[in-house]
Image (cartoon, rainbow, N blue to C red):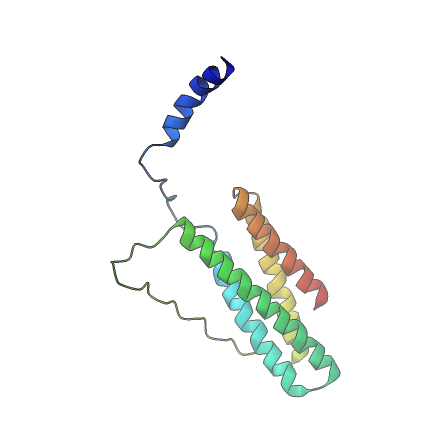
Length: 162
């Protein structure tokens, strides 16, 4: 009897979930697009700073190069993960047999030759990324909020290390 009652209660919900329509993508720009672009730009800046610091060869510069390389790796991972979520949420329709167009990577910005200023620029960059991600966390559901919370935490950690 209980099983029959549960089936009756679950029936309409089950049928409603079995409709043939696919969920529609939300209208307007995706809120994850700006953090994805920022992650790509931040990665390029960090790589540039790492290369410039490594060329100078002192122990202080080596520490900056190591921190910048770690930041570049994490921001690249952020960009890849955010882009994957963007593609998942809004798959681009492609004609059969055609590959999706590749987006060119951003041109690496020139690192400031003054590495004190370059370090300050990296710190400012990760603080801005942290603030942007933290601001979006409260506006997004579930997985997307957790994804950006992770990005914000990672950026806070890098700011402390730099």
